[in-house]
Length: 504
Ligand code: ADP
Image (cartoon, rainbow, N blue to C red):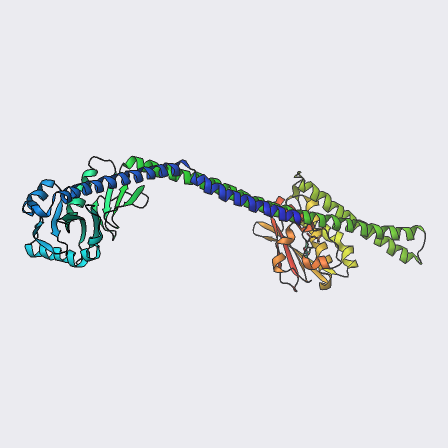
């Protein structure tokens, strides 16, 4: 029991080790390493691009923020245009956050009223929240947001001082230009694919990625554009395919190795179980056989001694004792035959000698041999032997042993039924021998197991009926060696019919 526990624990430990091996093998597989490497590379590239893009925007804004001054508003238009920055509008607010007269210009194609509307919306809804009055002097800040109508915007702004009073310069970024013209310029001639996605995940610029799900890609957020992403993927088809192929091969190799180990362990567990069962059966067999050898020997020696010492009351009694001795020695002989033949079969030796034989004669002789045992058990045997049974290739001794085993079993296990029916007939290209008894029968779940070597039915093991469990295994071996087989049909409580068939 402890050994079994140990074996099970060992199998479990090996399974756990296999799991760990698979996991770490996968993590360290060249494909995963290559993928990680590429992902890192893409990440660095994305960060670099974002820094470049943002510093580019900030630089242009700063130029405007620096040159726009309250005392030079007449040059506002000229200053903004000459800065080269891509902006939608610029406006200047006084200390009370009111747009200074002629302190605004709009560079978009929208109508005047619309431009004024947008500006008023920023002042009323956003700028009031941005704590302009607390801003550090001449320090540019940025704010990204979405207008009520859903349009995204980016504002850059700065607090300045004139005659001791604060005023504010606000730049409205041209997002359309940033996304559709500026960002693409950063990827001109690059082998990488890129996408710009807004805060809702809609792709606003860029190309679709190949094999989107498995593409090696990086996704980095903009600092200025809250929630906006730059996504970069390997654009070189060959490089991406190489990583994918390697990954597939690695998975197959690892998966295959793990599967082989697991199947091996399962087979090992099955083999151990079988071996255990077979060992149990063997030790049962040894004790059964010893018992079977001892009992008839004890009987023979007891009655032999009585005869030798003339301890019989009459001549009839002496004959009776002699008959007992004879019966038991026949029985002993049969058992020894069984064990020896079985041992030969187990060792795989060629045990059969086939010759064309008359089955009818062989069966009749076997029935004759069983005669005395039948009488002693108070049973009758009805033999129905058909006349059209032809001669077949047969090992007569082995076949006799098979018939005797079947009849013996019926005597041993079905004596209560009083009767045994033996039929020998031809069925198409087969010779069929059936032995039917009227005893307790065999439970359904044991009907195939009784042909296993050393197996004895549970119910019978409890009864004082002697047996070794090799009889039916031997009969099955003999039948199959002749190219035939043996089957049993039995309804528990209603007897059993064993049918042995041989080919003609
Ligand atoms: P043994 O008779 O030595 O136990 P066998 O291989 O001949 O071994 O039989 C195997 C088992 O099959 C027996 O132990 C018994 O339980 C069952 N069996 C065989 N023949 C019969 C029968 N005619 N009726 C009921 N059970 C049988």
